[in-house]
Length: 436
Image (cartoon, rainbow, N blue to C red; front, side, top):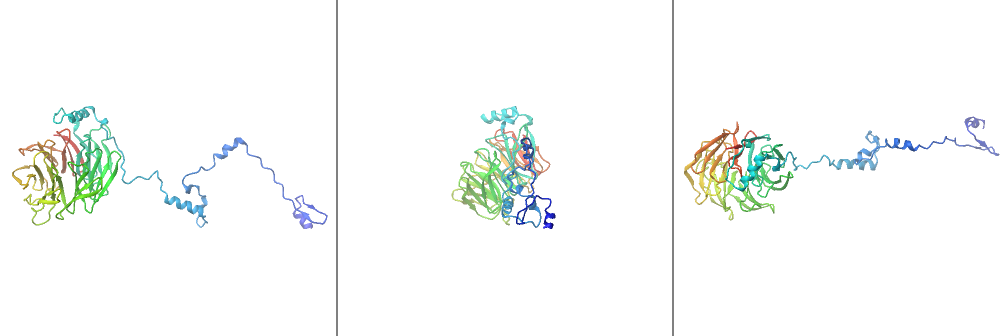
């Protein structure tokens, strides 16, 4: 008893009559209530709730060997599965770099475009600053085309896997869009006659319809071959023609996303293909590897029956990287690797004009392309020496040549409104617009 008294002597224990001791708990001092004015100071240090579950886990979760509860494990798994939407970008979306509107054009150029849209061929004074150089591709450019519905816009397809949209004469940023929809080099691009859409194809074995305004693709047409050329049907813009590395020509229906016609004769890669003006025939050129190269180098197909009408159109031992039909006359031209442009008839037997040709430029194995002007009075061609050659369509005489690049000029086209303006691209990756 004395020992217990010494131990608990500091407390106010009481002993009852029977000798039993009742221990009492020590009385703690009463804590003061926090003043109202200090409430906000305390709340400022409270952690805010975050939408990320891992941010609300206790700090001990990172210690090795510590037990992790079910709730913590579920929260940590949720963080791994749910991506951060603020940094997620669609792989088929393209950044907006500049405006595609014509309101950013200089007044005199905008007036020239609008005036000549009303009356084609009534040429007015064209300002010299129509000539521009457009740098943006990192590798060689395979094709260019001007929009017929938005004449201030130009599309280019490059080996750097991109399609660039240029607002050519903009006072601000000339490169309006960079379309990164393809996964390999892009071979060809065409503007849709319906407006702000482009159709492109390339080494990823696809053709893609892309909304230029939004910078996103709307349809993908998959094939089992590298697609080297696309062309819209001249009468039905819901159809387009594609040609590829396995020698297959296909007509696609954009609405259904399916092939409606297919033309197969040989496995040689298609270099180019073109509808005739009446859309009843297709003219194609192939990279023939056989000993008798005169066969199948240029072929004429019946569109509806899907059969070749002739496969011995061109008897020379050269391939033809480009085919173009005259806008009104029954003839077409073919860029020959023999360093000249040959002339053929679009009527049976599709004979070669042996007395006339366009010569003076050089091809030298490059995929050099040629084109007619809109009225068919001129023929223009690129060249391996970097010049643009302009010929008279009827006499085949060289009118002028324009130095454009230090390397090969691959593709060249005439502007759809101003017939004295041409756009071209080069093997070095440049795109330019010049006045002829």
